[in-house]
Image (cartoon, rainbow, N blue to C red; front, side, top):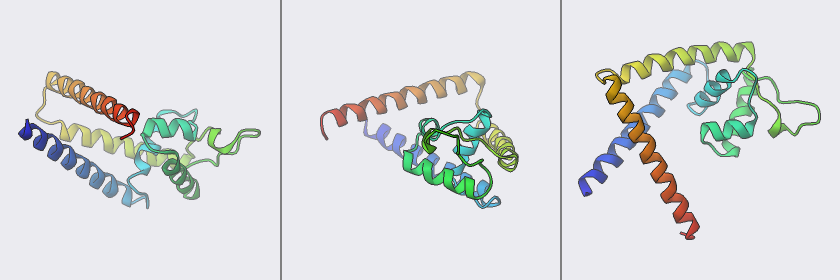
Length: 153
């Protein structure tokens, strides 16, 4: 049991650090940070736009982090300013500019290349089992955390 804990926490930590390192390296040429990757990714997937609240849910980030990211992307010209008449800024649809879309396309290509690279050696069946197991572990961890919060711990 202890060995499983060590393997699990060690490998998850190593994977997380590697992903963050890759994001930082891939964003450096655009003057962006790793936290911009998922915002650009999701906004590219939804050309009709997403609100900051929707982006927060999709990116699994808190509202403050998304707000900072959005402000930075707007400042750099990657996002159209959120300014729908009669709509609070947090509820306005955010959309990529042409420049933002170009960067997002480059990011998508790099994501595809990296995902293919890190999945080398896995069969389709192994990949399916891995992702199903990962989803189950994530769901179980979320349930545990919610239960802990409910108990006031």
